[in-house]
Length: 352
Image (tube, rainbow, N blue to C red; front, side, top):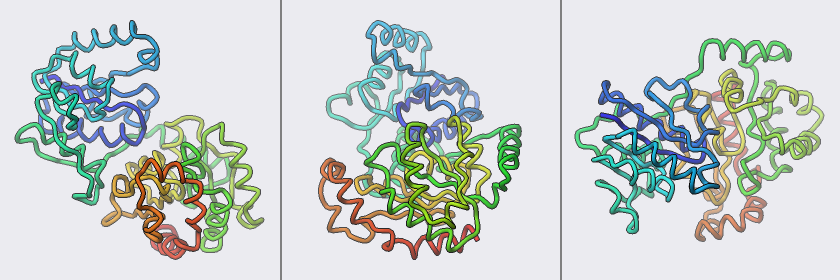
């Protein structure tokens, strides 16, 4: 067997779809398992022992039809026997089609179902504590007959050298990772970022409960907003924040997060990575993101999350597209006092 698993785009998706690779390799140890991902996502699955080869989808394939068809030609030459398309969009449809594999599986869409031997309709309601995003990947895996599910929780693999290096970085900054909380201070965009003035109140509340130090995770272009967040915090909280200790790469973030006692803040790829590192997490969801899809492992694991829908469901009844357009307005209604008691319980249980 020669298997291709396809998952393009975002980091969280690439991480959870690595479960397909893991379970296939455990079911078929002699099989060759390849994983097609966007190049910028590779660090999150680097070192995964269940992936034999990475197939990288580069930006140039979107910009040039010539480059795209060269890439599709290389896929055909691999002679895959099985393809699991966890992305299910035009690019992965083409990869699946050109692969010529005898078994191809993906999500059901009326206009592409002819490409695949097996399709299914995605779940919209949780079937397990893993959440629908993972439940649907497991359902994709099980389109292959008699496949056993050995694991439904993604894992990130760090080397001993990476762990030691991260511990040394903390030491050089006069910090202990075990006495530090990672703050997911910014989302990937404004529609996924909890209002800065509210986040400052959350941080002030945290420092009233614990003497842990705080470090921020953010993108380089968000530095100005992070400085504003720092300025809005109380003097006591500012004394606990180390703005100098930041990750310079995706892999760097993972090694720093792995050292921390917990991660708290905006839901997104950072929270998913923390869960895969077994770092306790408290996530603040954007009002337009479906919580059931990504609030994984909260029943039997040290994770918690909050969503405006938990407290003011009447505000979240409109279609996702409308909720996204109104995200700024909805965020204003998601005041910290709504969920601070839950945050306090989380800190007392998993941090202090």
